[in-house]
Image (cartoon, rainbow, N blue to C red):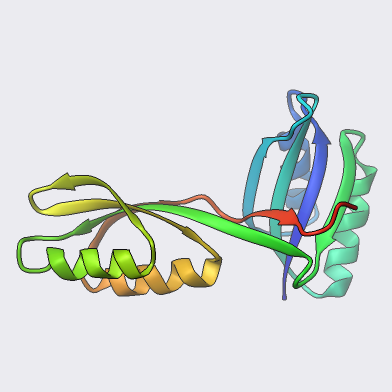
Length: 159
């Protein structure tokens, strides 16, 4: 089972290292990790996706709460949050396949960010499922390179 954790931390040198060290030291695997600033310049928000049952989640949460720099840990449940990912990819697209690639991009609301004679660079954002489906369709044209941000999430409530 995948869990999305939102971890509010102090914006200080070494916090990411301590959080990642806590995971590796206890044998927990991180599926994705994203860190960014908040409105308050003294804090940052980590969005961490982990796999495991409720016991693993409880242990991870307890260990995170023990870290001095951690201010708050929230486990996002289904329908309590919105999430997105960003993918930049380069795909083969010659004169024969370019129109089809552009049509798929239009359907997925992807943006063409660079055009070369034999390839296109594309930006697409959305849920993990949308990204996976888009990449599956692009795979048949030949994905040359890609980078994927991992999940960022925001609570639907003000709590």
